[in-house]
Structures are given as C-alpha cells and as structure tokens.
Amino acid sequence: MKARGRGWVLGFMTLGAACSTTNGSGFGGDGGLGASSGSTGLTFTPGSTGHSGSIQTLTNSGSTTGSGSTVIPDGGGCVVTDPNMDMDMDGWTPMQGDCNDCNPNVNPGAIDVLLSSPDGGTPVYGDEDCSGVAGDSVKPCDQGLLLADVDANDAAKAIELCQVATMTDKKYGVISAQYVRANGAPFASPGVQVGIQPNFGPNVQVQGGSNMLALSSGAARIVGQTGACGKISCEYNATATAPPGFPDPDPTCPPVKAIADDVALQVQVRVPTNASGFTFSFKFYSFEYPDWVCTNNGYNDQFVALMSPSPVGADLPPGATAGNISFDSNHHPVGVNVGYFTVCDPSTPTRFASNCTSSATVTCPTLPTSYCPDGVGQLLNTGFDVWNKDGPDGATRWLESSAPAKPGSIITLQFTIWDAGNGEYDSTVLVDNIKWNATAGVTTPTPVVVATQPVVTPK
Picture 1 (cartoon, rainbow, N blue to C red):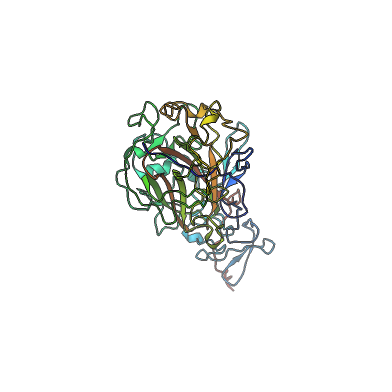
Picture 2 (picture 1 turned 90 degrees about the vertical axis):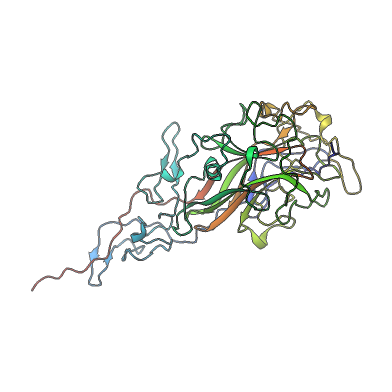
C-alpha cells in the first residue's frame, strides 16, 4: 500500500459569477479554512432569454383591412399577421408548430414549466412546448431501469434528461449520450464503474424520478449488490489521461499528475428555448476521508462536471479550470479537500487529516469546530460504513450545482470521476435531478390569427 497524501481543506462559499454549487454546511473552526452555507463555484443569476416585451394575449376580435392581414387591437402589442413569419423571434413560426407566436417562451423547442404546486394537491404545469398536453415534457422517465444497465441513454434518463432531439429538429432534448473516459475517449465497457441506483443505502434517496446515476473510481455498488467491491480499493484502469488542465493544480498541496480508474457520462443536449440555465444534484463519497485530508503528496480523487461551450469563458475566476461547473471557493474540483464532508463519524476526531505533515508548503488544518455534524446515517449499507478497517469514511450532503446556458443552444455535459495518483481508496459520486431554469408562458391558449383576404362586396 502506498503512502497517501492530500491537499488542504477548502471551504465552499458564494461567489459573484456564473455557476454555483449549493449545500448546507462546511468546514469551519480554528485554524481551518472556513466555509459558508452557500455555494461552490460561481453564483448563477438567471438571465434574459434574449427577448424583451410583455406577454400579449390575442383575441379573435379585430378588423379586416384591405392589406390582406388580420390586425388585432391589443393595446399596441403583438399582432400576428403571417403564419410563416416568426413574430416573437423564438425560432419557430406558427406553421412550424408555434402555438403562441406572441410569446418567445412558448414553442415546440421549449419545456413545460411548473406553474403552481398546491399543498397536497395536483401540480399545475403550462404547455410551453405546444404539445397540447401540459407537463408532458417534464414527466419522469427513469422507472424500471436496472442497476447494471450500461446504456448511456438510460443514464441520461436517470438524471431526468428525458426528451430526445436531433441535430436538425430544433427541439429541446438529448441529442447523444455515451460513456467516456476522463479525456472524452469512448468507453465501450464501463462495467461496474457505473450503476443506476434507486437509493444509496436506506437513508439516501433519489432527488428526482425513481433512480439516480452512480459513477465510481471503484464499483458503483453498495453492500449486497452484485459486483460490489467489498473493500476500499478496486482497480480497473491503471492508467488514464485527465482532461486538459486537470488534475486541477493546488499551489498549497498540488495533486499528482497521474489519474486512474476514470469514468464519465457525456451527454449532448439542446437547451430549451425558454431556459436560461440549469441545476443538478450530486453527492460525493470517498474512502479517503477523513484520514487523507491535506497531505504533502497531494493525492485527491476528484469529481468534475465539464460543460462545453464553457458557460463563463473569459470571466472564469483566476485559478478555476474552464468548463468545470462544480468547484469550491478556491476554484478546485470536488474532492476530499472541500469543506462539505459532513457525513462521517463524529467519534473519530483523531482520524481527521491524520496523514498530514506540515511543511514549508503545507499547513495542516485543525479539527473543524463542527466535525461530522450529519453523523454516519447516510453511510449505512453503502460500504463506506464497513469496508475500511479503520472505521466509517465520509461523504458530502446532497449538493446542487448551477450554470447558465444559452436558450436553444447545444451544450455538452460530462460528469467525470477519477482516482488521483493511483487506483487506491475509491470514490463514488451520485448524480441526479437535472432541472432547467425555464420561464413560463401564458397559462391559457392563445389563438393564432392567420392572414386573410379582404371581403369583396359585389356591386
């Protein structure tokens, strides 16, 4: 067994920029790096969809003019005069299926929006996608998926990417999905490194739908499941190539350059035309916590969520790697050196950073004031509770990352995990519940007025 090493403890906090990861708690305490209960990464502020003006409701009242168009007096607002013209500039004409050409948030490329959710009542959705069925584009689609399913399209369903699209149809949805290595190379047989889980032990439930995706540098299995590792290290890919800029350098505890046991889900998806961004939930587990926090060697298994095109580009904060939308307040990817490892054994304070040795470049953190506030309940039956002879290891709470996206654009998301340095001390990430920050349209159907010819009265 190699001697292991880690970087320093990083706190998560809200930043004033474009992406974020929120959660509830973090490291704090004397001598450690503090963490707020805010966000990791950049703060997402929903922006404009690229259209301006108020929603106009058309009626069938109006006057026929000799110009060949039906003009509808609506207070000087929208007037639909031609079914082949894109009046609201959303990329769709009435003839192409736009059922409200006076509202850019309503067209076949949009996603339905939750309008209200009464206490104990039935949620009410809009019909922004013009399908004629309110809420059909946001219905869960991951029922009945199997643990050992290695179809990447089903993995997309497990994280609530349900709609399917093509490169040419302009509709919202998944254009392609595949499992890849960290550098984007196709991974035809990810095996037990991926899994579709209905839960992760009795105390960790899905965040959306019926299932969630598990990715692991070991086996994406828990106690009792076929293919479970049964120990802290199961090695599958001894050598791997990290994406450009990774492992993300940390000037205090730089990570080693080598990675192993990498696996990723890569999806290409068209953004809904009424969405200005998205969020997703994730939860990170590692056998490296708490013993290997902050050591000189810099080993640090990582989870990164890469987005292309990068949502922040030149505005990315110094020290962050372009395209990664899940990182901490020091702009480093998620690993055991972040401040949100709150699920662990509070009776083992001597294990915290026990392999850290202070040096000219490393300052070992002191025990957080609030150590393991969530206890070990969320580790139960996951393997992270019993497979390490030294006792239970650690996990984060559910976290949520956010990022902006251009309405109607095509983006690629790559959810990636790897072991750093070697294949020892495995880590697992759960990914679930992608949600679009979408803008609702009008709640009642609006008739499209087709151009008419003037009536000629015989003399």
